[in-house]
Amino acid sequence: MSADQNQGIVTAAFLVIGDEILSGRTKDKNIGYLAEYLTAIGIDLSEVRVVPDVEERIVEAVRELSDRYTYVFTSGGIGPTHDDITADSMAKAFGVPIDHDPRAVEILRNFYPEGQLTEARLRMARIPQGADLIENSVSKAPGFRIRNVHVMAGVPSIMQAMLDAVAPTLKTGQRMLSETVDADLPESRIAASLREIQGAHPGVMIGSYPRSVDGRFSTQIVVRSRDEALLQQAADAVRAAVAATSR
Amino acid sequence: MSADQNQGIVTAAFLVIGDEILSGRTKDKNIGYLAEYLTAIGIDLSEVRVVPDVEERIVEAVRELSDRYTYVFTSGGIGPTHDDITADSMAKAFGVPIDHDPRAVEILRNFYPEGQLTEARLRMARIPQGADLIENSVSKAPGFRIRNVHVMAGVPSIMQAMLDAVAPTLKTGQRMLSETVDADLPESRIAASLREIQGAHPGVMIGSYPRSVDGRFSTQIVVRSRDEALLQQAADAVRAAVAATSR
Image 1 (tube, helix red, strand yellow):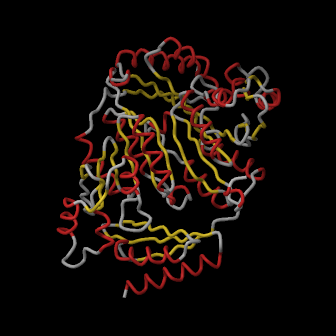
Image 2 (spheres, one colour):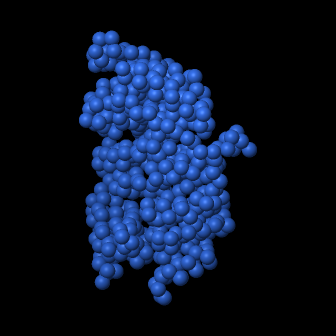
């Protein structure tokens, strides 16, 4: 058991598979959604990678991430076309055979009208041996879980439905709590105080996020901790510092 | 010289540094922007990673990416607060000292009114030895380039200004050309033809991107190549296949 698990911390990585994100043609909507979702249920998203539709790149990334984090989630590359190589890449990454899965074939057979379950569509039933299916309430073709890796679709509505199907099976950790303090100040004016408060409160993480609206800089200060009392102490100190600086 | 460079291909990775992206608090806007920008100037974005504000994670990622791609771009973590650790992490990654850089100090001194260049603000002048500065036309505190790594701010308006400053210094490759064919069909109906066309046109990449609007599935087929003639041949074949399937 790692130190993380000892402290009730559950970690995850997200692997986005798709040339279309790297070319800029499609703007990713899944990273922010998954990040917020996992945070809300007490899982720390610790890394995101975007890789192209290239088998060796997918295999390398999923092996690394699977070794390093409690869970891995992937999106993209599980459709019926020749560029959908995620399922085969997962089989290769974990050294297991892959073939049409009878459970998945059954789902597709029930969904498509007689005679329309073409070879291309059947391709969506290729699942690595030993994987569990993940239900797809939107368009039926399932995702799957192999080891600690959850393989989901790239289309946001389907990814979200699959995530809902998966969530109840996940072990979750102690939730990270957070408190946000808005400061109508550029962050450089509050930086010294924040450094001091961070030093005095080792059980919290203090993040400072500048923004610029119409050329005017303000700052959001986010205090995070798994301990409610520590969180409040540090947030109070931040609020006091912001008030003192704003005067 | 690698095979890639032989063929006039220039590659890049983007390293997004920031707890706020991984917690879902901030939705990243830089990945899509950079992807589109690099594609337009003939640089292939080949990988994206998002890592937390943790020195060892930043150091590890930037070393790997710097070895692997022509260029690395980073965003985030170069402000004045205690959680801005990107500059120090870069110095560590490349084994060089870091201190207040006279050129950067001068820029800040000219920008801030007399007596307002506090210690926190001076922190933004910490630049690894041997780095070149990247101009920040928005809020002055510069980014920098060390080796093949371009270190930029996370605030989108500033990141974009820095990218404009950097672009003229980049070597660019032969542009990837693309043609998009819209098919009012679910991708499974066109999948067999696309596989065949892809097999017959090794010099192009054919991507198939399903979407669902109000429960109706359609497909965008994107054909890409660096060779205009090959691109047109393959795109014509795709258009013919879509027309035949739609009949």
